[in-house]
Image 1 (tube, rainbow, N blue to C red):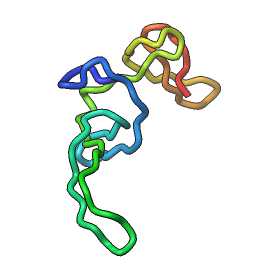
Image 2 (image 1 turned 180 degrees about the vertical axis):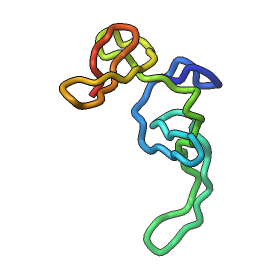
Image 3 (image 1 turned 90 degrees about the vertical axis):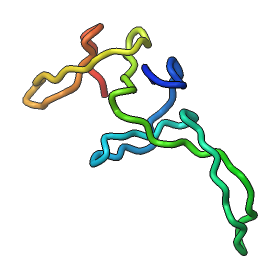
Length: 92
């Protein structure tokens, strides 16, 4: 879920994570116009594509309630797992 910016309150799946720039691309969020030149295989035109947004502007949704939540890490059976701070549920 996006927690800041023009698309605040919208939800979507993360398509790509860009770690070195600390950005994520979320489907159908922050759509920008891309002008494409026609080639032999594809027609040209103007298309919409999602642009990257900063990681601090998105939060994971709680698996139990569906609300945005912070995450924590704990060790379960010798493995480190992420869990929801709101409900305590393990995030897969």
